[in-house]
Length: 359
Image 1 (cartoon, rainbow, N blue to C red):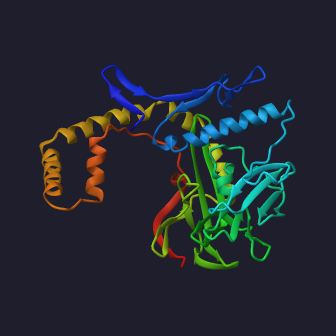
Image 2 (tube, rainbow, N blue to C red; image 1 turned 60 degrees about the vertical axis):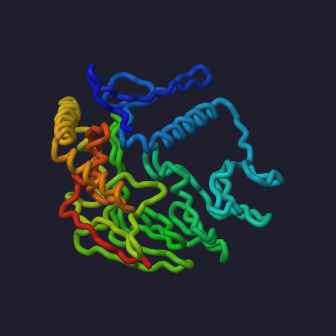
Image 3 (cartoon, rainbow, N blue to C red; image 1 turned 90 degrees about the horizontal axis):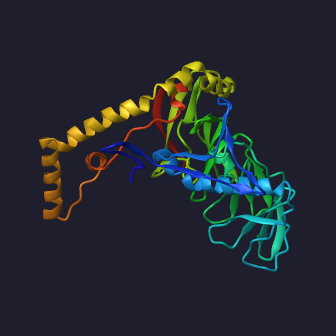
């Protein structure tokens, strides 16, 4: 159900907030563009609902970090086997639960498996201060292959069978698809964010590579000024769209040089032009027009006849309609609204969809 809808009195907008107190101190947020502080929270819309659980996790992490500055908190090992004596905490485990990885106080990753312990990665640290980025979540930074024989860690693949750490320094974004590690290579990950709560990200890469059984192979390549592009919020659990033996990924040219684009993005969001856009409240006016249009379609004779015909056929025969027509009916029937978010597409030219065979 949507979190914004119209009422007789106007528009109901559902917001969440939190008051976090530690040792008589309150956690507050401050924008570099405003002279005041405010509590943690904000609007919930379709984009932010999927991040709600992650926001809560981030709040908890910040609270614990704040407390640790003045209180020496002893980390307690978290493992099924209580005989383990590791000065740290469990950060990940294989899909079958038989292999565990612990992070120690000095940022080493220890693999625990078959009653053995081994340091497999050192200097495991925070990569970004942006709590919305995929690089803020251990679930992304540490990923297991389906068979549990390989584990991706930030910029490397650890091969458990051969006790070997395979560097993939050119990796931009990574995901296991079964036992194949698929990643964009030779590019840049961009953080696209505005202090007011608008958050997104984008990744570009010249190549698509696959690692399987410890061997890296190139599966796709862009030349000249073209890049493979993920121009939307990157899902921690599903980086690539997969159809059969192919991943579906956009390609595009950048409006600016790759190494200059992050600075340009930040410059745009600091600009007076963008501030003026926010003050105009375009979302509110467009949302009203959108709702009026949806109401007109919903109440039209043609739409009612279409719904009745589809429903009658599904009730009369063992069939169910699928695809765009059902999605359209669902959108029109549900209370809905339009909203916007910051986007990397603004910085792209000539976007095309491409299939890359990865197996």
